[in-house]
Length: 130
Image 1 (cartoon, helix red, strand yellow):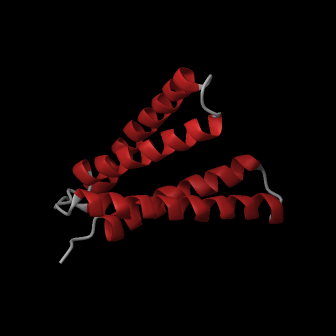
Image 2: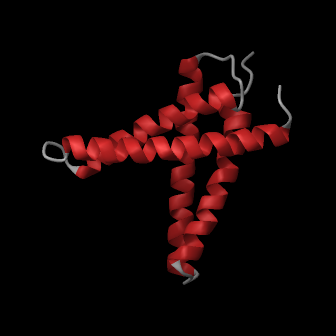
């Protein structure tokens, strides 16, 4: 098992790769299917595939999981879905109730999402199964 500082560095590297993959996938799917499928469904599909890719990349390069791929994917999707819900609600609360700028709100939820992702992927999605 790698040191926590190594895991955090690899988490950042994998995050950059995942971001590039998600961006390119979203644009590619939109360009290929925009005449046939609504943009909402294209974005949903790209996000779903990107989350799966992200989970597999973190599984392989950051957390070195030996658990079942299906179990890791199921827990990875649950982690990311939960984080999306938490950060979306927080974003709305910061904007609507604290009346701060969208730039500050997005920065807060982005930083929080990184921390939550690392913590819950490490301690839940890729925990050692007994």
